[in-house]
Length: 157
Image 1 (spheres, helix red, strand yellow):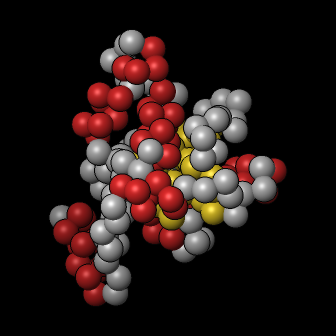
Image 2 (cartoon, rainbow, N blue to C red; image 1 turned 120 degrees about the vertical axis):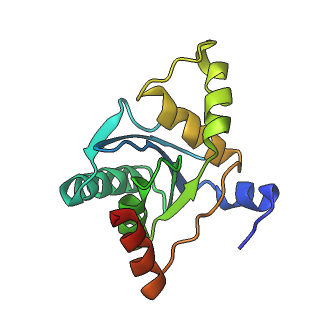
């Protein structure tokens, strides 16, 4: 479904936890924010691109959600190759919403924080989360059934 930017902004309310995730091939980096862009974590959370890493991420996010009285979790990430597919399937099974931000937007916006275009694993999740709070994201199509199997086959080749 296509939403206008205003509709996307309205999805991020006082009860929403926004998590920015910098996707990597083996390791992901995450930071959590509220609807106003205030950081709810003291440091970057690192987790692996496997089931153990996803479980630790889920427990970390759930602890922050509970601690801050949030009911909705929106996870923003950049579409980095096929590495985001496993995380997307994992979080959708747990009633968390995964959204995508444009990599070009991340590249341009991150200079606003410190006047530096440098890419760091701690800076990108913050930039991604800010874009989500501002409604600058898209909702990815996640195929199901036979279509998901076909997609998996294509990436295995």
